[in-house]
Length: 311
Image (cartoon, rainbow, N blue to C red):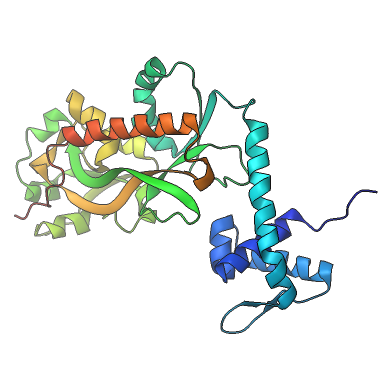
């Protein structure tokens, strides 16, 4: 007779809530809403016919739940190790990497020839997506994430700290000598940055340099980072950009960094992977290669970590 077990998703939700003593933190770890976690726990309580938590100012497990909690945690650890063992042969030479699309296009892909030359035995599969992948539910080895570095339950390693700089084509840059002159220029802005409070609009950036704005700014807006950067290279105007995303254009001379002005941020690119997978051979190889590429870029950044200029 087949064993009748409760939902694994419900058990996972219970284990996470019990470990964190918080529905909100469990939801963050599982990449779902707190309401979804609560619903799963209620399903488990209905299955067993008991209240698993005593709800008050803090969550407290009842006696049965306290006894079951370490067993469930151990069971999930064993399931993860079993899944890892079963996947070794299938994905032994394939590394699946999740990355933001713009980072893949502008930074990672131009460097992959070097990775392939040094590690021809590893096949890379890139999953370019803006969403945060769930390592427990998706077939992904590592992810490159952009943010402040807080990734609960995962191993994370910083690759590159990010700064914001103004850039323009060489022809346009030759006629601009002071930030105050930008008030009369066409300014380029990517609306995709609006989600990030660390990325300023043009007015805020100019005011940070003590530039008086006596007339409305002429701003062209774009829905994608690549469009704004391409417009800057075409001489349409001056763009604010994350430095790493225009590094190759600066090095080739297609873009010029104006005034050596730099705005530091608390944002960086991080490599993340489940803690139990950080020592997998192909992941170590990719981590080390990424770190070397990041160091090469940092050494080439003449203005890093220079403070913003004041005029």
